[in-house]
Length: 112
Image 1 (cartoon, one colour):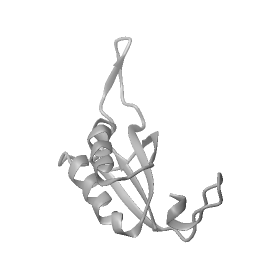
Image 2 (cartoon, rainbow, N blue to C red; image 1 turned 135 degrees about the vertical axis):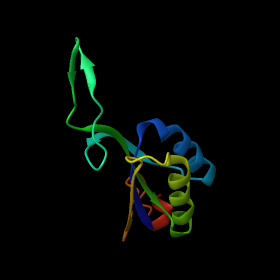
Image 3 (spheres, rainbow, N blue to C red; image 1 turned 90 degrees about the vertical axis):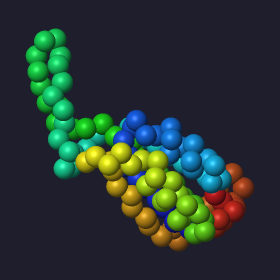
């Protein structure tokens, strides 16, 4: 099993979600986050005053998938999340050693 974390543009979430659903991904978590990287925040106006927010809003996805879905999930995120501009995001992949479903004590991939 693999845990995939992706930081994506919030505007690309629906496209990525639809692609992942088509692959058979049954569960994912997502969070509204803020961060900073190579892309700098754009200047915004508030009550007629220009300012630059310190952090840029993004969405973080977290998925646990069987090993055989890993490559498809990564390709979905890469294909649907890409705009070609700085700030498209990052993907991180981790090994998952164990998983448990609390409701009925299923373990391993059956707990997903």
